[in-house]
Length: 631
Image 1: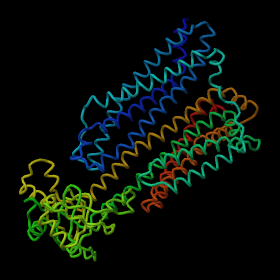
Image 2 (image 1 turned 45 degrees about the vertical axis):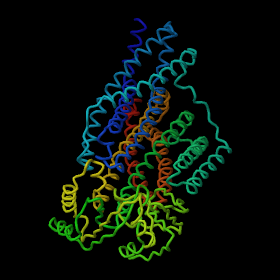
Image 3 (image 1 turned 120 degrees about the horizontal axis):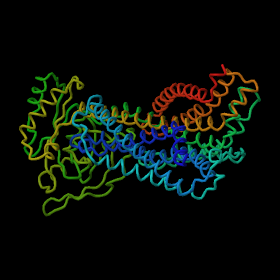
């Protein structure tokens, strides 16, 4: 029998290990292609088709997917390759040359990776089709459809092949430097004792406390780097604390505690696997909780930023329709107008200008502005969870009045939402004294005039048909020259803002569900790798225990207890971390309690699933060890 035939025989005998590595690569490539197909879809990323509030939600999940791909493929290959090193070490003791080994490795890895890529892209295409079907039919973004494009295929293939090529090169470089004895011991290398230390316990505790303090003290929406620093501190603390866990695993003698003994025997790799899975579980809980909190938060923000049920701007001969006529048109389509009002304003590319008396008349407020001054209005909800610049324009503003300049001094600021967001408004709002407003209106060169028209309905939730009819009539009257002009004069409504917020939050939950599932499955794949490797390494030890009197029922308890340490401890720790960060990030918008509730709910769901995973892994290990024959 030739070395190639022996190698193929080894491959057939351990085909499950190859199959698991193949599945990992297919899984990773499929998920990456799915996000690449969405991110490169021109319709989805077109702001005139999909509101940027919705499309921007794909950015963060895409980043998480890329980061995951850069870590998971090398990890899964390192586990697979460690087992192959032992097998090639045996072949080299029988006379197989290093060149033959390297040639064989390159050939088998090239075959596996190419098959994985093809299968992953095909699977990703099916998932992507399902994804776009959900976007259109579940979330209701009807203007987007899946399109065949070579770009996401090329991106997926390029990134995947680059990662696998670098990973393989590093592994082969390490292989060349290894001795045969090192190859034979590849499975058990690195399992040296990790001794717990008082320094690790104290330093780990201090780092965890520092992580909490940094997050609660300095985190703001505009300072996402604080979240990163806090998370790194937390994970560094967990790494040090895990080093002290070996002492906790040293317990009483007895059959039940043998599970902890087996973990202590492989504690160095247990620490690494637990650290990785804690990170994945924590991120899953955090992302799930964060995305679920957005649903009520986005809706509340939409309502807060829409004090009127309908607002549109009349200027330059566009949107010319009296309040009465608009009310009659709306009523024909079942929308009853409770009140309506209009008010003149001026704007340029930066400022909206309002007469203070007109604002007071329309809103019922009691602003006072002296001649020669202006009052700056920030139309923000400070509890919306976003950052807002509040230190601008504290100076004199000059207004050109032909040959003269009118300089108005800063007289203070107020934070209040006066009108709905509308394309006809500039970013900043100034209130002026009546005399100054009229002077600019009469002689100003940079500003043009318009009329704001506001409506309140008896039932804004059922105003869709009326709003659509009004928009159609106004567009037909306006004869817009292009899409930009048509967008500029579009009406804005509470219903539209609310529907967009719903779609955005639902889409975020929909996308994050893929990421959470990806991380959760990855964590369990890593755990499975670990349990599988131990079962293969310790099969004789388990059988020896059986021979000295351990029954099948007792062996089941030992394996279950051991696997609990792999499956449940990381989830408990990850859930605690995820719940904290879900609270801390949502506290800015007064939704910290909601963040805790949703994160705990997600943790409970994952715990139920993890119980099924634990039982499944234990049954698999019993079958691999032949425990069912002992019963």
